[in-house]
Image (cartoon, rainbow, N blue to C red):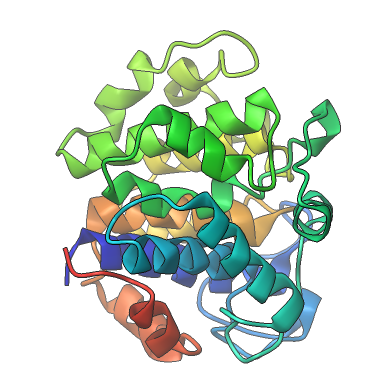
Length: 275
């Protein structure tokens, strides 16, 4: 299997690891393996909206021969949001407010308060296409149309592409020089854990994912560290896990154990294309 498979299943595993702990504060729990129930009372291995929207995006790319079709992506999202498609077990149990409003009205969130991580968490499949920056922005803007959200997606896809090209994260981080609110990306290697936030703000999620990737080695260590940052555990972990899948692959015993527990991997596979 190729890097797309590693990335999306890395995202899904990390998402499922984080689901039971969502909203729990850092230091009040420790995730060490794939468990269930907790916050959402879901069985072990159940993935959430992060994976659902990522595979809905991937399915559209697959169906459109590698091209970006905004209307088709939006329709897939609506089928997920309102008809329980692209879900682990036929039930959508989690959706962000900005996402739900945008899909119901057809109008994306464009104010500062609409900068949750709901487009960042699903943008990874675009790294495996030759789409342009404008197309990345347009895919974000199906739900999240503020400049900060769109720019976060562009940065993340760029990092993913560089990792796919063989660059190392330690060499990428110092080159990520941007104006506020992305001005800390280039110094993430120097920040302590207590300086990293892990809530739902898109910039915080991007920082947390890249910080974790540069501070931990191995797929297991990286995704568990992302979950254990607390708060928005599933999304921070998913955004991290997609990149960790690219870097480390899924050949470790831990990754294989998680894959064995993952709910409905067949659906995820069916949404991916051959590389």
